[in-house]
Image (cartoon, rainbow, N blue to C red; front, side, top):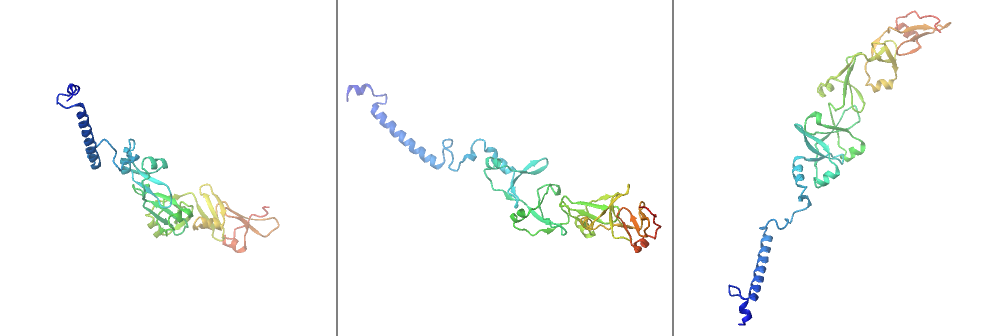
Length: 295
């Protein structure tokens, strides 16, 4: 052994060359062992799991919790996605923006919302009603357009006893009960139809109604019973109102019969009309004496 080699031996009696070789062997064994541990998943903090994505990155941790808390729903006839957001003691559907669906929910697929399709038998309008949690006041009603109805799969609507937005009312001139749907269609209700609505409360229109003379076909719409304001209506207007039965009277307080100067024709002027009357109509009115030579 050379003297130079003796001078550089360490305390273990091993030369530097041997030390380097031993260190290299230890490093190689360590790397090999680490590879085994990594492949077995026994080392943490050194590499992300194979299933990790950007959704698991910092800032997305809230998304997992939010998805669990706020379920997503989609209504069949519309592209809008709703999330049920906690609100007070319940939840409320809130339209989800595309950005939030992308960034927070990571394009999570929504569940189909619970939706029914209904209509009144006297109206052509089909309504979709989506049953959000919270009872009747929380339900969402939509009068469907034809494209929406097609998008829903051309559903056959069931007959409903009540549709949100319906206005129930009664005129002072008859005991009949009416309903005006959210689409503006008026209908005279039978007792059974009112019962099917759940006996909804109605508005008593105590100063309005319909009237006709018992001896003439014209019908007048009473705008104010208190002031006597009224006007004649056409058959189509009466039909649009649901054919309310007018209160039939022989005379009104401010009507009159009159004759033109030099004419035997009798005219009538009142809330529903101002025209010449027949002999039978004049008799039906009680054969009143006309005011002569009025014009």
